[in-house]
Image 1 (cartoon, rainbow, N blue to C red):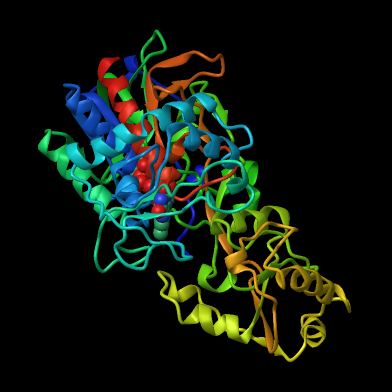
Image 2: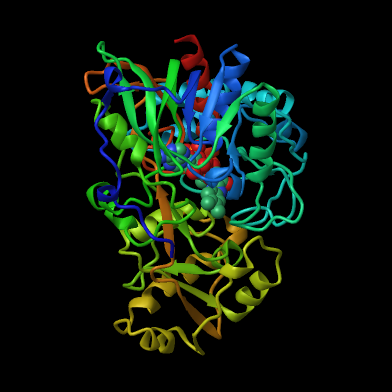
Length: 496
Ligand SMILES: Cc1cc2nc3c(=O)[nH]c(=O)nc-3n(C[C@H](O)[C@H](O)[C@H](O)COP(=O)(O)OP(=O)(O)OC[C@H]3O[C@@H](n4cnc5c(N)ncnc54)[C@H](O)[C@@H]3O)c2cc1C
């Protein structure tokens, strides 16, 4: 596991008065901190709006977590890809789903703007930036499409409880790429490559190995630049119009995790060690407000092709969720509501069937360690009280015989009585994730002071902000709100 960043190691975080700056090493209209998805989108939008733009990136190149990501971008409301695959969607249905699934406590104005602007955002990505999507749908269970299909359900829209009241549509749009390798080279690369090519074409400058450390403010409280460390030297960078913070989450800052999202301690995932929360601290030091710091995305490390065909039980042998929902909902329910305790109970036939299906995540296909002829034997082997798992399976099987799951509403196509031999796959502790909370921003990506007023000259987007997810999550929400509100940050900064 990579080493974590501790705030104590960093240089002082307090805002630096502009009057103390003796030399501006770099200067631009808009200065963007972080060259991941939010930073690249901000840079393209600001440059398109006519601003001179300089991006400062801590790593040796652009990309961030976004380049390593699966690439899902949450888009809907009737995008050309949805239409080409035969799905109807509206901005209102998308809003209803996002407000129901990504809460509690969502910023409704952000979701409204996001959904109303989603089709336009698709066109911006494809036509202005050249992001490619294959016009095909992947309908099998899975974290990602195993091939290069462009569209998938990524939020549980077509599963209980949402499908009962909100017309479902798949909204996970994944850029086309062959030879994908999860966590190394995914669809996210095919989002970032066109975005950064576009930025270069527009004349956006970039400085690498440049770690932004503090904000520089004038006497009126306006942010006029940043202090950064480049090759071990402190440099001051002047922003004539505005600074955009886009440095990612705080998943790798143990102090902040302990304070805000302690369940993620020791289990950061789908993030990178550069996500140290520094930008959040820098803006806090200027009076910035925060939102939903306890919200976390939680991945569940098992192949959906397997668990959808069995039942998931907690440490007491009780079912706790419909297994056909978005795997990230299962991750959250496991970690947050069930003490990170989960077992997959599955019979041999269902296991073999799942193993024979295509998957994007063969590494998440676990072998059962406990196999028995009866559920009574299995629960004894698992160390559960006599009758606990039997009661669960009895109830499940009684209704499954009619293709029903009255407890959790799993869809009929996935409901089958559990037979024999039967196995338990130990999934205790098999979760990890990243933080979703951060700076409170306006719909125009202005960083808001605790007074509610925007902090002049300061903008932010991506996972250093609280975006569309306040608690729940859907795959694609991070690249989605990072690119959408990143664009808005760039435009706002350019006009500032
Ligand atoms: C394996 C994997 C799969 C994922 N799959 C998906 C998916 O399918 N869909 C989805 O929506 N999300 C996915 N995510 C999450 C998603 O990639 C991130 O949440 C998203 O990239 C956040 O955007 P961002 O711009 O805030 O951060 P990033 O894209 O990480 O960009 C932040 C950049 O800031 C830089 N930086 C950090 N600190 C500083 C500093 N002090 N100074 C200068 N630069 C700094 C970083 O080096 C980085 O380049 C996945 C992540 C991983 C790793």
